[in-house]
Amino acid sequence: MKSIYRTGIFLVAMAMLTAAPSCKKLVDPEAAQEKIGAETVWGNDKTAASVLTRLLAEMSWISESTNGYPINMALAADDLKVGAYISASTQQLYFNTNMSDPTQWWGYWYNYIYYTNDAVEQLTGSTVISPAVRQYLLGEARFVRAFCYFYLLNTYGEVPLVLTTDWTKTINMGRTPAAEIWAQIITDLKEAKSLLSKDYLHSNMTVSTAGDRYRPNKAAASALLARVYLYMKDYENAEKEATEVISNPAYSFIDLNGVFLKNSKETIWQLPAMTPGLNSQDGSAFILRKAYPTDPQGPTSSTPFLASDYLMAAFETGDLRATKWIGDSAGFKFINKYKYPFVDASKPNVEAIMMMRLGEQYLIRAEARIRNNKVSDGIADLNALRTRARGGNPGDLPDLSTGMGQPAAETAVEHERQVELFTEWGHRWFDLKRNNRLDAIMTVVTPVKNGNTGQWQPFRQLFPLPAGEVANAPGLRGHQNPGYPQN
Image 1 (cartoon, one colour):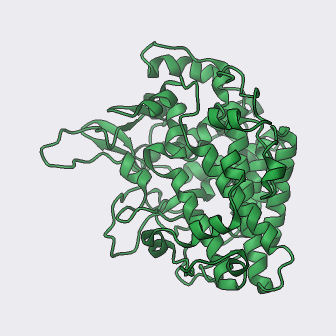
Image 2: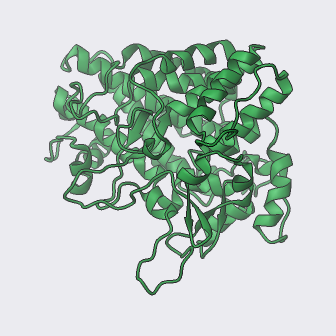
């Protein structure tokens, strides 16, 4: 944390305003490129907006490809299996044998948090930024900070709650109680919701005429609030926030093949791919293809991942998610939510990285209603998803009975979340963990994944803190997660 918390605003501004030209092309930050100090970065609407634009663009790196969060969390759970060579660090996650943090997630999240803290400090009380732009940027900063802490907390457990850029105050911080972190997440999201635009904005903070959904809006804040309330077992508020999103005419279900397209009607928030020539690195890593006509069919070192047997077994007869979101290459089943991995660099992208979407909101509302003894209403939400996923044959994926009991309805929610949200942002892992089901599932799955070379151990529900952070931050020294080496 030392290196993160000592980063200065001048260096942060420079890094964000002088990023690679390819990134600029994708997100059009319209940022000044000359060397400038903090007073200039936050001195007018254009440069201030460019800082948040750059932050949002940079956030796509944590989701990108084989080292990205969604794929690695899907590997750690039971969404994926490996069919070709993967790196040693990825094997640790897949085999559930990591004894140190093989990822860079911690560093990414805390760097993003530093940027948001700086934005809050610089924008609060600013008299040189126009009121509307200042309001929207503050909302974005609060939203991103909440998003980062949600993933830090659910990945590592209690972490330092850093709300300032003053490293002299943060360098000695220890782990903050989870209740305080959850409370800050809610505070940030409520504030973000009050500040953000109801519309999607362009990089110049005007309404996006292109329809891009790259910047979070009020609905994105509601969507994340709904998820947070669900995890906290505040089912009334989870239902309320999810309903607000579901009722918004900007969002609607569409054909399964179009869900992950750029600006689809199901998109609540997307991020652009940062690699020229790719619509998304997730798509390029998932979709089996031959680099050369003479290559064999099936997975390769560049596309090593297959849909797991557990995932394939979860699909019911007639569920189109098993064919429209799962591809088949000579019998090898692969994830096919993204359809177009490559794009001509001279043409607009047709897909984007999905961060949050409407389907999850139906699942959140369904679970909240069922756990709040409104079972029939919750089942109706599940049936809305099943209707969208249903084939054309009689008897395909029939509606669930609205008369089923609460325990059966809760099982139905878990099932629908598995077949709807697979490989998306760690949902499967988090669902099993928060419902006390991770040990039961992974006790079976882990030995299969690692060829009976190891057994599941419950302490692995939390990932290890990076050893360097524990060693260098006095407040964390000696406070590694249980089960992992303490020094």
